[in-house]
Image (cartoon, rainbow, N blue to C red; front, side):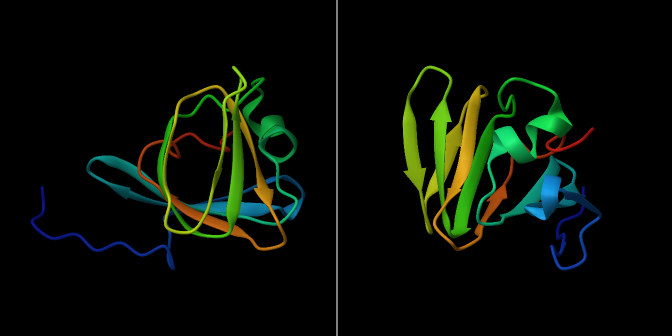
Length: 120
């Protein structure tokens, strides 16, 4: 393992677009796995813009992420819900839906759940 690694989301190793042009996921790969920066455009909703790609009833990825900008609501299948915004750390178990709140894109960086996210 290298003692120093530099990766840039400005030149990601993979880009996965969401349905209807409602955002994208940019991935860089490190020894510990994929790290992703996602941009969710206003109007984005997991059940409309990723579910057709994932083909599951809810998002089955676990997330450990930091919200850079914008706001997002997450609702678990058991009904628990939370709003997240800039500066928030989010730890989300599998089994949820989510959507952008407001008219600003929501940008977040996830260290856990994006390796197979929005992947056919």
